[in-house]
Length: 108
Image 1 (tube, rainbow, N blue to C red):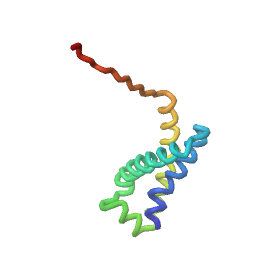
Image 2: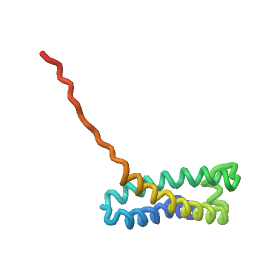
Image 3: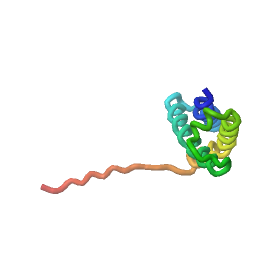
Image 4: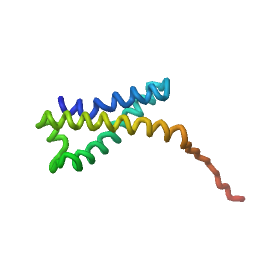
């Protein structure tokens, strides 16, 4: 149960915070951002856990075996939310991607 809470719980908070910044995301976009936040938060929190807490083995095993480490991981993920969510909002407002389709037709 610790594993589910630590890996998927903070991303729910991230989506709620992002929704309050964006003001009105559709359900489809909320699910999309939830998946993105799960991936990004867990990658960064895992890397920081290896560096800060000196974890040698598997992060998932450490979360399952140690309640103290599970709390540290959740706290670290919550701190990362305060950095990553505004960063996503700033990037979304200032960066736009456009695709242009050009057809090449050869003369006959």
